[in-house]
Image (cartoon, rainbow, N blue to C red; front, side, top):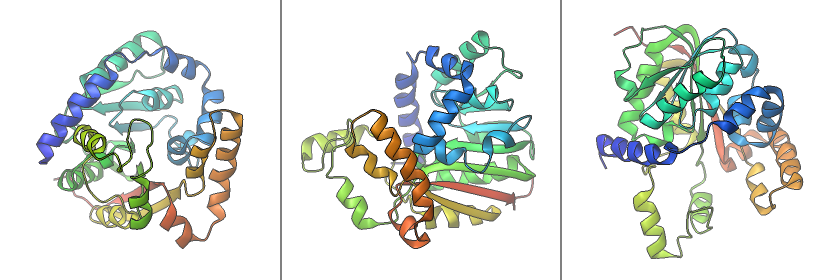
Length: 284
């Protein structure tokens, strides 16, 4: 599938997904910010990963661009923490949520929605302290991803930082096995017809999610690349029913897996935090 076709598929998928999204939950969370972050960053892999290394403190008073803001939860949380947030998404529904959030909550600086294709953003070079993406890059075909990373480097200040939370596939065997285990709306690969239908509607392209790929992709545009595995032990939380036992296991697992040998942790990790620093790119 071409990048343009995949982009249109993503737009249709996420416009539909967020069309009727209720912002009441987001407003509750920003009004109870500490409680929300204490829970989310200790039990949920994406929040745990993205907010590692004092991210909560670092963004206060900083200019932050979020790629693929989606349901706008993270954009709202960052704005409530005192960041000047620019939120981009190809889905028009996200823009409507941003407008509703700005009308309903008095952020220190209202969230600014950057609509449409990120590559046509018309934003100034070296104007952002942070560029973030929460489960975003893996929606892109590889040629498009390269363009997005190049644009990220253009937008970042010299001492700026890009951080992305993405899935990780560093074991081909483990990746193949997981397709045979049904998760949520995804059927088992044993159910050939159902799996094929699910795959046709899946907005994610077939591409590499390996840590090595993200390292090599980043080195084209940044001097410094760091990869942090997340979820090697946490992945087993799916065997627990929803409740405190599950959350207790998650809290333990996300901390315990940090102590695993690097090779083991990287090989079997479920996801990863990718940090790019020191842009190589010129203003062109």
